[in-house]
Length: 150
Image (tube, rainbow, N blue to C red; front, top):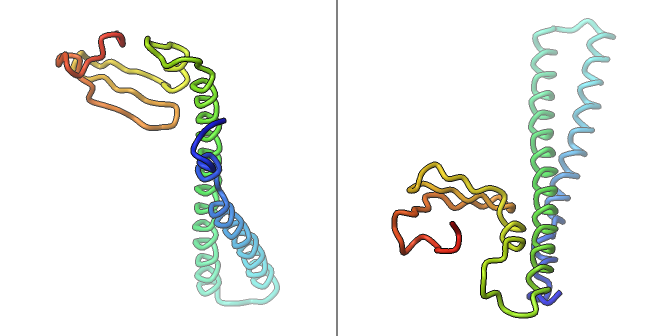
């Protein structure tokens, strides 16, 4: 695949995200152990329940924050991997072309576009498979409307 050397590797790199994910998971495990220790100690020794609830609440809030960080990093890793795969497929299709495109290629367009929604002639929204969006496309202005698109 003839692309800027290393471009796909750069785009697909999730090393830092994996580090964040792993650190969040480690923190979740540590907080789970600390919460369990609090519960065990509270069951074993009579202690002030208000103080116990405060300590447990702090641990629980920290756990929820770590869980949120973990979930966001996992989702971002998965999105990046998915986008990289879509980009690879797109590049393969483009490189398979023996000559420059001189007419609309429905397969190539379909490999990029997720949905096209025409709310009106003045409001058309393109949602691409990589999550990017073009909105406000206006067919009322001939200079903006590609003749072959519609």
